[in-house]
Length: 281
Image (cartoon, rainbow, N blue to C red; front, side):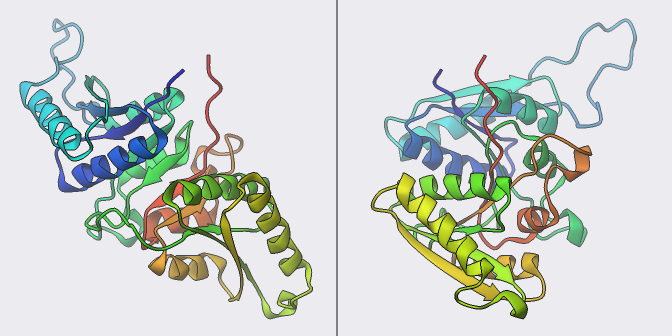
């Protein structure tokens, strides 16, 4: 099963930037790229009100032209890239979550710095980042070109989700030919070079090197009172940060821990949310 890289496109500048990142990700993975436009309002607007009108509205000609133009521009920029386009009668967030069941990676854009501070990503990106069934790449900030320099950064805390994030981060660093930086944030009481925090980092580093021969891994032990803020600050010079997810148990709004939520909303580079892939059917 040749899982595609899927990106949501609606014609807005942030979504077109996300499409460029998705094209690069597809080339790195040797996967096809699917441009998907969920053309119903997330709350159902666009569905016929008249009870005698059966079904949902047809896909629009404007949407088709937008998708085909975007696809043509991407193929021109990345020769050899296979691109498919599709309009889906559904809200954009729900559409991309469903697409993620069969995808290698889903890419979503960021709407930037407008609106409330807690909604920097926007409702669609937040929904997909929290509920995706495969890794989700959140493009932040929306106007930054595809990073070519800087390491891949992963926060390490010893949890199962962080272990998965380290594995994903190592793969990304290998694809980019860059460095993997493993960062653990601790307080002063656990900052000794031979303490548990240092051992935790060393174990994660050894696992990353063992699975990816030739990978350059840097281990950073940072003393700070707030792990989320320290990680966000560390993203300033990174090409990508990988965030863990809690899996699919518990409350729907808690699929991402507080640190991962902070990164998704405020990181200064793209964020890869390390959801495990849905098992192939």
